[in-house]
Image 1 (cartoon, one colour):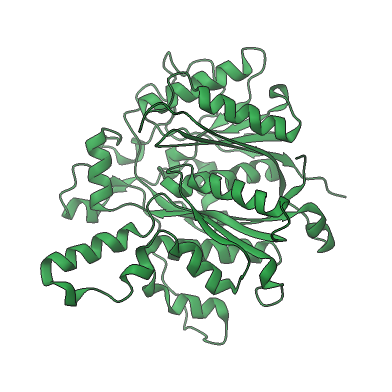
Image 2: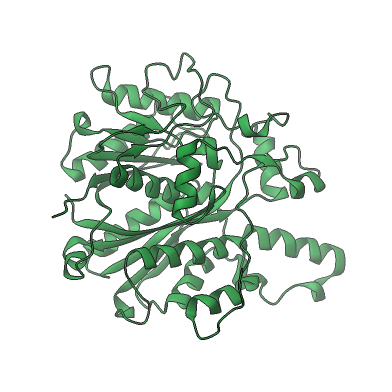
Length: 422
């Protein structure tokens, strides 16, 4: 599968800001977004650090004659994860030069990854049930929190009647959605796929549960320095939220529209560790296998990989395992640049794979690799990896991989290549 899937649009809603440029600027500047979160603090969560998406409020009167304005006017009905998704998808579609209503809706697929569905709604409504009884529940409870509904709501808003489905592979969910979309395109089941991930898990329940697992950073005296991927002083991730959406098309369809691809999805790999519920394989065997599968599908070798957008959570175990896998794959003779956006954005859970795929595409398209925020020095487990630090690095990237791992032993790797123009 070499260069047969084009990435023609990107949309992002992250703690770095709403919109691709806001997020790209934050990540390239290494501007950490972790803060003490008032909601978690009020709930008495054991860890109060989080990376929140800035408030999304309409800044002008709504125009009901415009579809995008109608969506904004109904945002209150949706879980935050769906709101993030709708906003990111609208940007992605616009950047791809597409307009709902002027396409064949039966040839448009929607594939969305999520780790937790509308968990914010579920928690809020459960609190109402306990405090005031069944009569206090919103009639939108089920449509807002069921795990398939983000994709359902997006398909409704777009009028897309092609395949519509949700994927869930924990923190790899967004990347799995992109793989699924590519398979639908290759099978001829659609011409356009709107694919990505979304999650809004900055909630008291989720924060407390991750804290109980010992997964979260407790650097509450210095929130901005808490998320430290690959750093020797890392002590866990910071919980984040957001959405990333890519528009994918077969290259012949994109060419017929005379649209210039941002990059190609040249290959992908997916494996399972079959090892542990929450810990990755200690030698990174599943991740290495997924990377090799992605490169084989792309018809490329490890020596051609110029850049890796790492999963890089900032936990002691994940970063050590991922670094080990990178060393095993590339040895000492070839060192692709490595970065993790989680130092800036925190861990956006099911959205992470899609957000980081978008950032990988941008690195290729713009010839720039963002730094890994808060990375100052490696430890013995991460030494020898070319981790970009301090400032964004100019780099002409021809082939880049995006790694995503998830609880349950899910490993996904996406291989992107530079688009041919002219």
